[in-house]
Image 1 (tube, one colour):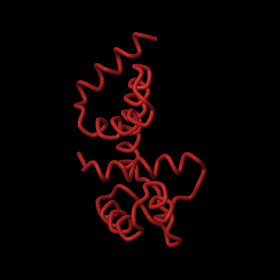
Image 2 (image 1 turned 45 degrees about the vertical axis):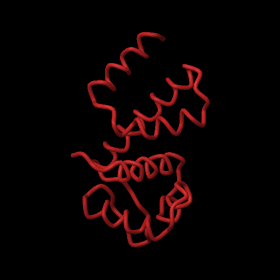
Image 3 (image 1 turned 120 degrees about the vertical axis):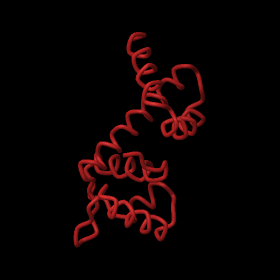
Image 4 (image 1 turned 60 degrees about the vertical axis):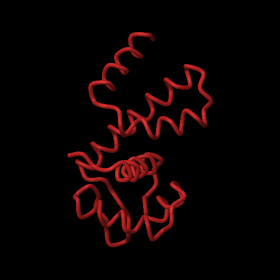
Length: 122
């Protein structure tokens, strides 16, 4: 199921925060993304209703299997595109900004071709 870029960003942020061994709360996501807590709260409700996250009684957020699949896919795209751009000589800040946009719009076919090309270069 395809979700909006903003939802993908939230899911990716939850994944990254949880990989650091942290229990993830809305306030952590707001701090990570530099978003208002109210905006994050609304987004978390939508993600919960969509079946992408679960929120326990203490407010801790975990990804569902579907949410994790999307987050891991977006994170892989982001990492590969960012690293590729940096290897091409793009400034790290520019590469980060561009990778954040490109990860959402690149087709699966193009991403897989790019991934294969980069892997064959190594």
